[in-house]
Amino acid sequence: MHVVELVFAIGWAAFWIYWLVAAFSMKRGRVPWSRELRIRAVIVVLAILLIRLGAFRSSGLNSGPVRAGFGLVLFGLGLTFAIWGRLHIGRDWGTPMSKKDDPELVTSGPYQLVRHPIYSGILLAGVGTAVALSWTWLIAMVLAGFYFVYSATVEERYLTEQFPDTYPMYRRSTKMLVPFIL
Image 1 (tube, rainbow, N blue to C red):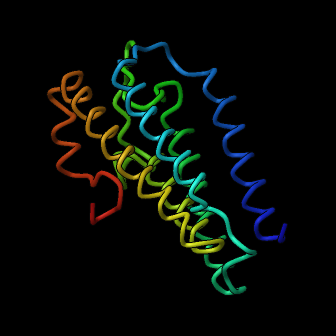
Image 2: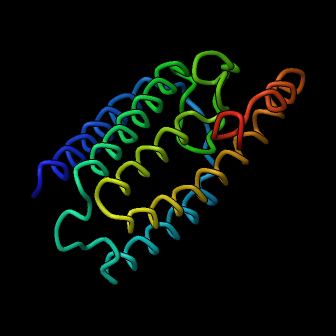
């Protein structure tokens, strides 16, 4: 395994371990499991199909040092932004599309830049992985992007119901995933 691949493997592993540990501090909430399970089942089936077809196999590192360095920078920025979003939202964080008991509307920190900084950060880290290792990783990021946009749309519907006076104004003043663009 090349050093760059090892850095990405350790980085993603550390991120997901942190994510699992941090999940123990979230507020209780409700998740519409039937919808969530259907979406995740489709993603798992597509991932298995892509893996079986060899979409992520590579015959070695697929980039030069400049491209690998740029990818590592994007990866680091993305994970940092996602963690900043997670830390800033605190106990109101939850699994995608969950409804929290006694939620608070968080609009400061990274939430001033985008409404869903965790999704944005994970996607940016994934793009960094694709840039540094192999463009086929963009397939996974496109799938994750569809899932995140769908999840964000459902979450925003819930937030509009929970905060009818403040959320619509926040939504109009802040982009969903990419500052100033989307």
